[in-house]
Image 1 (cartoon, helix red, strand yellow):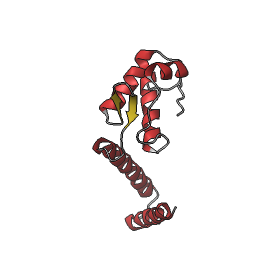
Image 2 (spheres, helix red, strand yellow; image 1 turned 60 degrees about the vertical axis):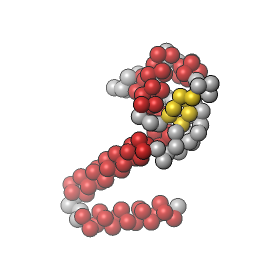
Image 3 (tube, one colour; image 1 turned 120 degrees about the horizontal axis):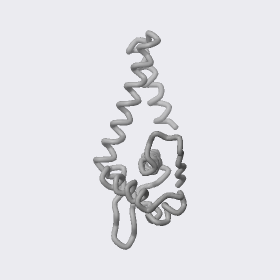
Length: 127
C-alpha cells in the first residue's frame, strides 16, 4: 500500500488518502479482507495528523469500501459489496462517456466504437 501526498493537488489531504486507497481497492492492489494500517500508523507513515487519516477512513467506511472491526482494525470489504459495484459502474460509465465523446470528435461511427469495445473485451477475457 502506497500513499503519496501532493501539496499541489486541489484535493485536501484526507481526500487524497481516500482516493488513493479507493483506487488500490478497486484495482485489486489491496485485496478483500486486508487489514489496513491503523489510523495512527498511517498518519505517521504519511506524515499527516490522525484527524486527517480518521476522516479518510470514515469516508471509505461510509462509501462501503472498508469496515471497522473492534479489536482488528479497518478491513477491506468484498468487491461483491453493492456499494463497490456501484463505484465500478460509475467508473465504467465515465470511461464509456469519455470514449464516446472522443469518438464523436474524430467522426467515428457508433459501430466502429462498438467494434473496438468488443476487441478490448476479448483481450481482457483472454488475458
